[in-house]
Length: 467
Ligand SMILES: Cc1ncc(COP(=O)(O)O)c(C=O)c1O
Image 1 (tube, rainbow, N blue to C red):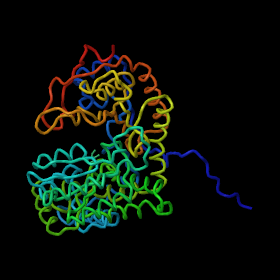
Image 2 (tube, rainbow, N blue to C red):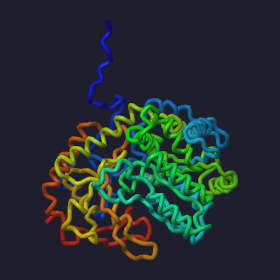
Image 3 (cartoon, rainbow, N blue to C red):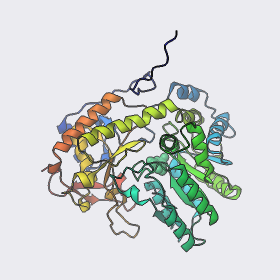
Image 4 (tube, helix red, strand yellow):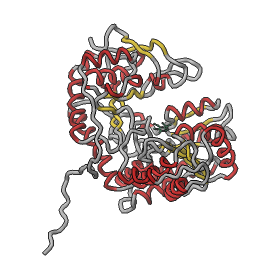
């Protein structure tokens, strides 16, 4: 008699490794010098000086052998290349949108959408705008309004869909501002809010409310596949659906989308702007030609379009999504076990440390999350990113307002690190947690007016990073 399938508990990386890239070990003294050289800004480090790079999951993933094979098939024709049609077919199957414009990355899609839809004085509601989305809305003279649900701002709250938009407030904004909201957005998953998912019920409600007011709903859909898998795991009625079917149902709630395909496109570069409205698409195509490229390549090489056509589907494979979400949850459990406060439950692409809770002795005016991210690098060679008051504190009028949360994001590149890398990370965090009382704040020494976290120079607020 055949042995029945045994379901082993260990969730393994659903791939084997064909090419490796060495990582470089540095001494603490070397890292101290590198930090000083970088003006205490992790964005300005040489990547070779980083051991484990969790700065972002954007464009940092490993491509599959199928994607590399696809790249060899890339058609580099200026117009009408077959790679575009493959790309378009993959995006259309998943999203169902009529017009699909390739862009070189997400912010280009955002800029074009802002260019065709917004004018000064407009308002764009979103569950939480990502930094580039906010900057593009504001540079069009419009207001970027964040409407997360209250639970989304409580790091310890284990609500299953903390990425949800507050539909009651959305409805109020639409009622109070007729004609001033040309588009509403929902970001899936909600990156700035902790990588938290948005439920299908919430998307449907947001869609109903927007449509009742004649306002189109756009998804910022960088992590649509991770969001779809959370819906499968956590929302009634989706357990037996495939991630593709769930993604299709998510997009059916919307009228368009902006996408950074550097995330769930599983590629190193790329994006798209998609929509159903013919007139808006016509204007968007004109802007695309002006600033990105011809509509059948939009700032990408034909081989990038091939990598994406394969990648969108790989991102929706269940074995991949199970491993992906499990690796993040695993680090979350290790950190919770050692008493490091994190945004609960862990999100889809990252673990977010709650620096306000971990370092209550560092005031928000001294950027606790930024300080913690520097110490993680100094002690363990780990690069993370601050999502707090350096990133979001400066208001369009130049004033300062503390961000609602001070988070350190440990974002996982897709298919890059293994379990022992994660175990190492947990050890670094345990060490840093042990010296947290000694961590001191920082202050800005030099900062540009927009997106200052990318290039600001900082200095210790009290002489050194550690007391
Ligand atoms: C939610 C979200 N929207 C937009 C973007 C911008 O995409 P890109 O970096 O490709 O311009 C990002 C990138 O990190 C993101 O996470």
